[in-house]
Length: 492
Image (cartoon, rainbow, N blue to C red; front, side, top):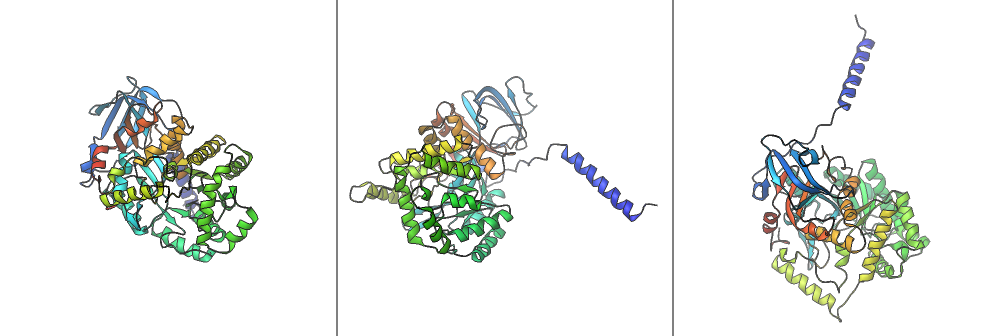
């Protein structure tokens, strides 16, 4: 007769063997979602098994493009990748000939929004922006703050339930913007964040107003809950934030307080109060101060070394910065805006571009410098990720169109096309901890794919020639997605 102790040993041994066996097999993959009535108007490919043949593949790792490739998509996943003629095409598979086309991983961009400015108003775009993201091949995003948290939560939940279409979302809650309290102490910060993390937010974003005490408390609490913290910083310097353990810093190196302020005085101010006016002055001075920075000089290198040593990622948002340079023409996508928002945008540009009303906050040369520092950061081993910030004051950075522009600007300022693609795919997935499922092309990964006409590894602007976008193995028609919101962005 077995004793209680013997029974316990047997149960533990059985559990150990079971876990060992389970650990030796491939993890169960996500199921391909059913195509719902809300999704159907935008879906062009929904066969359970699809063979993509004669494709050029850019896998997202930085490796060169490979010609003549076949990919098998089954049940929402990539089942096989190989040379044409060497991959068995399953019976009954739908075959799509991709001669002259390129398959890339779906873009993973990390400074996106579901709101925009429109004059004195803040406008919700939780229906239109997700469709424009998906139409551009952006299959995963991290939002960088919410003006109405419940709208963002609802948008993500509707997409996950098949009631709407759009990318997978990691939602960030602001610490200090759009009704969030000006958090000056640690206890208030903890209460505020616990409420929103319990409500479903999965990331935290500090803003320029955030002081050192609040940021330190936010980072400690978030990390205890396995949540990451990013920041558009000014009242706390990049070095201070790195020392506190921040995970990411937004807007590259365009607004670096470390370059223009004496550190000891900044530490005292940032630790004791919330000062909105000081933050505004800080941002303006930091932008202007970039003109005096050598992007390959000692000061920039020292900051890069600190960020790399502390494993702090940096998010490049070149389209938002380009919008601050008045001599550069408006970006594409303005025709997607609702007529009143288009009128506002044109009036804004006319006002800021006129000699009497000009308020330049960034020069073309400073825009180039921040991109150069970003590449130096990447070359030094830093994790550079990408986003676009389609919530600028001019309403001139439009989701989807801005994501393609991000890659174009990176290449314009010295990145190779393959580097820009990796930053916009695998690097973003690594930051999100999702790189085993998305961000690159390989067997057993999720079938999140961007297919374009042309070859972006040679001509990066071909990234705009979207043929079809796959998310979890379902193919979406980019033209139908765009047309569904043309002239309506800002109203839905």
